[in-house]
Length: 250
Image (cartoon, one colour):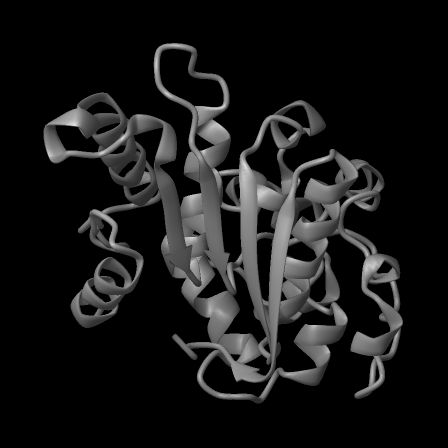
């Protein structure tokens, strides 16, 4: 599915492009996918010269769940002192958080193909191999009070600019957390699954970033919130918003 796209990038940017064929869930449980991508990135950073590549100019890129993996790999690499630093990361309509599934973009685009709101969550649950009630997730019952307090400074509709709420948005009522649901949902708050939830000390060290968002995409606001977090820490962000775009546009 991606070979032609990768060849296009290679041709148009005069770059060496490495496409990682990572193992897939549910046959290979989370976080095997992240581990494969991280292993590939580390190997290429170490052997860049063998491919005629300047190790100081390596960019990692992904779309949708690949954008999630890209963000997670970039975060994992900030702690490495034995490798060249990434030049940049490119995140194309990435999934970045599961704290609030009622952000304006989730409400406005819940029935927009190809990534319906329900499909997003079903795929996410298959990825982490968890069985949870969708209704409880939509109500936010999977988020404990402690987590809610911690994450509200990073994930909130208050941080979505007004112009993105004009197509219709209603603040969601707050429902009490379910202890059992919170326990099962624990892996979903791992920054490898939800990179928007990484600590400030990690976010502050990330490389220059390009983020693409689409207006008709449930994941639009994930990108907008990550853009804000990066910029709040002084990271240079180039943002492209496709006003007529939808998930899968690439």
